[in-house]
Image (tube, rainbow, N blue to C red; front, side, top):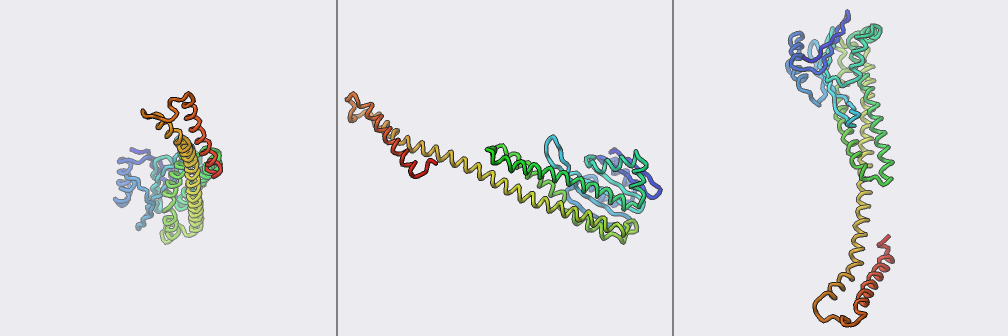
Length: 307
């Protein structure tokens, strides 16, 4: 069974389930009257954020980015939330640091418990979502810093090394956008749930603040996407330019050596060749080859094809 922990207050109970499995879902099925489809969603993580409204509870699914320092990869971590009049239930994979910190602080410190449990269950929901939202900004800053570093290095003759770095950033931005893309609709729906007895109307302004933060993060991600696309195109252009320069130089060398190759082939034929019997015949052939090579080199230089 996944780890099931509780913090109990006179007004409501917070049940936090880490790494839910079949036993955890069965616990919810026996103790709460949740819709079977909601329990199925808890069993099978999804990338789709949503809010389902029922008579006596709300079911929320959100995905937040998690940055792995070892792999330098941003992955998605899902949080499932049931909120009713006297309970708040959260299910996660244990990778959402803000959620873990709030729950542990409520377990270990009565002062913190009073802070989060002093109001109603809606206030606790707001605190959790607000903390998770703020957790997103340092990850955005990290991506922005990596992008600025890449921009500096692509002009320091490190285009090939930057290809992999650019692809890492692009992958992280795509994953980040997946997590934030549907948040706006869910948070917007939360601001319209004041008709529920357990959703206090005065907290609408707080959820509206979270909505503004979500929009801000999305706008930053849009700018980062445009920037990384521009950097990618610039890097590819630099690589193509250098490759073209190499191909150009190899082509020039081939053309310059072409007369020498042709003359060497002619003088290598087993037929009567002019100057074959003369003592200076060999040096004459070499001289002709070198002369043609020099003339072609001068011609290409005047045409600025060798610049």
